[in-house]
Image 1 (cartoon, chains in turn cyan, yellow):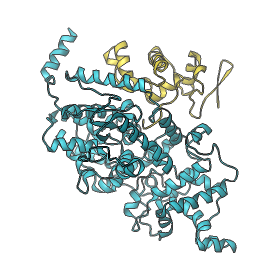
Image 2 (image 1 turned 30 degrees about the horizontal axis):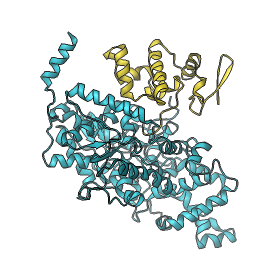
Image 3 (image 1 turned 90 degrees about the horizontal axis):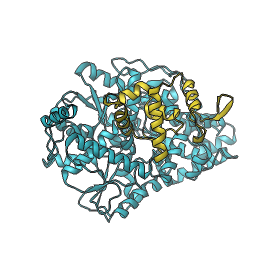
Length: 515
Length: 110
């Protein structure tokens, strides 16, 4: 299956010697004309794409002043060179953040700086590292800007705070606008517009799936916990990644949210119109598409007449929700102003724990020893609660409340310095498996260490991409795919519902069934 | 790209999924599996047939939990789990089984 080498794990995260061109490739599958059409992009590479790319770069520079600052301010100090998980896992110097930035910066210098314009006339632009927009450059852009998960770890260590994610987003947006988009991201955004979610899960299938989950919870606990869809007049609209309906361990987390809502005594609903929290518009740097995706949530909230919006476990969705939702789709003056707008499911559960409103039996999770993977977009692009660092403490507080055995991974691999799972930013596709497996190396190193030293058996996360990525890459590093769990799966295991069958009753029932 | 089965050529995408749902028949399924060096047993067919039935009703492959539950009901509780499905379809029941069933690949964060 694999035509690439899985990196070897060492005791400490190993910084490789650069191997130029080691990740050279033609990049992920290119979007087909109908994928491009749905997003308002040209069907295929336009005739005068060189000029058009330069022009689009100019437009982007006008719109985002930060981009020009990022392109101008790098002093080549080297602080970022060993900070990207894709460089650490692949050794390709174009995966060093500065190497990745320079792919765009060199073209920027030639066409959009006074020095570049002047020196180009003399044929001396190479003096300032400026380059023409050629096919070779475009191929490098397409390849290496799809080896960046926009996780922003490099920006934490850059003395100027240069955010490579912004540069990657700008490059992808320019490529989309000249007709050179990525299939994975663009096909998915098209499905959101057409069907309502990344999966393409139509309303009847969603209803059937939710019904099945209600049965499962009732079978297990004896309590009827609802997972309502499109119910008007509820207090809360839950917006969650569609992977929560479809995949494991995501779905166990979804059942956890449902149990928490049930126990809190609030009314809530899912929406078939906004049956997706993810917003891949951010991944491709397209403000227009990001806004269009966000507006579905506003419309669903108004149509259903809810008072609050809560987001499920999805990393980049929380970035969009926490940081941009109000400007993209606001004002949310029709929602209850006494609650955070929007609120994260972890904030919701944490709040109930603080008020002592939930009863747990943490021994239900005693067969596991947990650690927690901070998802990049939650860690570095958002916050939770009302204290700095809440996005780190709140999920951990929840896990420690519902589990007796918890250990953190090495301090420089979590929190603000967390390593990406390797599949974020629109790279969670099979055609990028080599990139994904290599990019997971730093996280796999940190995880292996706590497995060996502290007996960790499972790793929890609050992001659908992280969960899917880890289930796929863990086996490459000789660990089980089921090591990855949802935070609300742990909550679900330990939560004691009012009126729930006791263990003895369950056993008695099972015994009765088998008779 | 194309897949050749008994002299007929079928269009497939970059990853070997059938381009047209209606092109599917059991021989095509066997050929799709053979392209991955896999052989379809009765156990595989139980899953493939369920996927096709579900797809016909809902225009999407079933969620993993829906699938495990259905297989468990049909073949017994010991087989109603994802471990059993992964033994049959090591590359993941959602993706690999969909491919042989001639269904589109599930997309998104899965």
